[in-house]
Image (cartoon, rainbow, N blue to C red; front, side, top):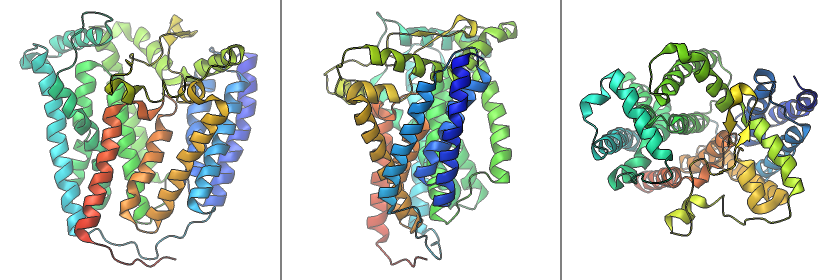
Length: 432
């Protein structure tokens, strides 16, 4: 471990203390004032322990502490303080709620899978190759290279892109359905909501699709549990499932790494493992070095060019490159490089550090308001809490809202909640 990393690890004590204090004062990790700090206790400290060869300066850890404070302040404003008035008797889900979530989840799984089928058909790949492992890894490698090719790469099929939001809407609704429905057939459907994202990951070897599905599912799952008065995060069931699922996902991503190399030869496991370590833990070293370089650069905020790159591209005012940033940072692990700068670079580069902190405070405020209303039994406020959760979950990678398909997914969740509210009407709820 380098001296710089040791200093960052020492500073992490403050981050842990802040997270613990917010948890004690708010009473649950699900409150965004504690959730952001908790998440970065994992995302910020794990790289220091599992990838100590790549130096991480105290500047990165100091930024995480300040960012956590900003989110906490915003969440306190949105929640009207630390304490939350929770509903005395959580209402049972209505038949209309259950019907809508069930239909939307099933339809999204079908349409999400149709996105991959359309993609394969338009790529001129026989569907039979998808069910042959040897041929599939070659196909996946070809599609992976084509996706990042600078020239000559055909754009994705229009229908496949149009159906892409359903790939992510399925797990976003699946998490809610899993909580609301008690029957096993519906819980299985809630778990099968991952299938479209898994298909995209296998075919295009893009791990982001699976990760997006996971954070959308978890965000809606925890938000729906809160509406039922369930505040536990580190329960025995959750920990056991996390260990099992974590092992399965690690093996799955290992297979995806082999597919990117167009091989099934496990003798290349060292190469794949190094790339996985880089992808999982390289962000802190990259952020630290970029923050150091940022201070040496002339003051020139880009005013939304990166943060809104997705909408700007859709409107024809720019082109978003894969990975967002062309300049790569060298990492020690196996000589790998990375351009995972976390969500903080887009915010700081576009709006400066004070502006970035203000935006993080707004995220906390939205989450705090959503937490307060969902805890009071208002299902219609679920999108607000989901917005905060997905934004926080994705901060170790980049800014969540640069992806148009994901923005469309969250908008769709809001429309679903609005439809349910109009259909079932309103009813008074007792709070404690």
